Length: 382
Image 1 (tube, rainbow, N blue to C red):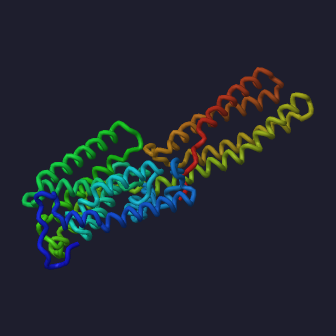
Image 2 (image 1 turned 45 degrees about the horizontal axis):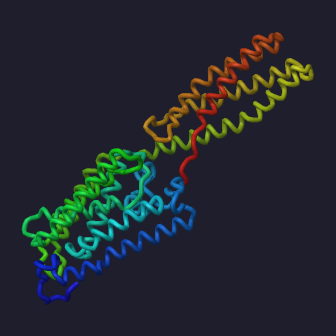
Image 3 (image 1 turned 60 degrees about the vertical axis):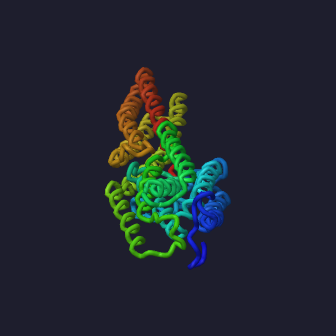
């Protein structure tokens, strides 16, 4: 930055003016942000998070924006998630965009103002993401970068800024193209968090408009009134978005408890099923008494009734992407099948009725197929 007392840079032929353009090449905050993102990316990769293929289930432990954790009190994730990326391609694209437009915007606003609008946009993007989808799992600097682009648009739209028309037109066009393409791709592609893009863009426009000063005002001295207005504008925007946020933490914990109960049910029932399979083969060979075999069948039936009663008592959110509510609904259907199967099997054994035994086996096979389809997926690690 030029020392105090130097003449203001003159736009004109050089676009930004020689001193302002020289500052854009330095862009200390942009450089620090790039370095911080790089260090975080390398650290996560070294800790097993993956390079080209990210292990996304580990990322909540690194500070990604996982809705049930963020909305349940881990609000710091709104900021930390902006420095985390899902793989090398995600990282490279965002860092290229940051370097390309960040230097210009930092030169226009000054380093302190640029740092504030970048972080405000990052938080606004993350907050918009969980407001739109409270079960979201997101990360990346794109919300902050959209905020930087929004600030550039605000600078272009605010009268009296004095930016060279050719420079203004070139960067304004590039910003519009990038924003339009990214938002359109987010509508048709999978895994694109458009809510974060829009939230960051809105914050960048609002904060950028407040902080924008004419290009001739050099050096960029601190102005308490303008800074206070920017903080107030950001706070109002965040508060407005925050009213839409729903705490999904309790529902997520309910899901974890359900998953644990399901695992206990499977692990406890497996020995009983093996005992029935072994006993049934021995019973058919005449090596096991009827009452002993019936006792094994009734033990499994009692286990099923107890376990299914426990699993049916959980109140799961059907909107959760884990789809455990569907698993629970399947288990409710399995219960009568299993109960009927073991009741028929016990009757068939007592009466030595092959027809009843075959009917029991058919119901049991159907129930087992439903159970296998209902097995929940692995939960993300914190």
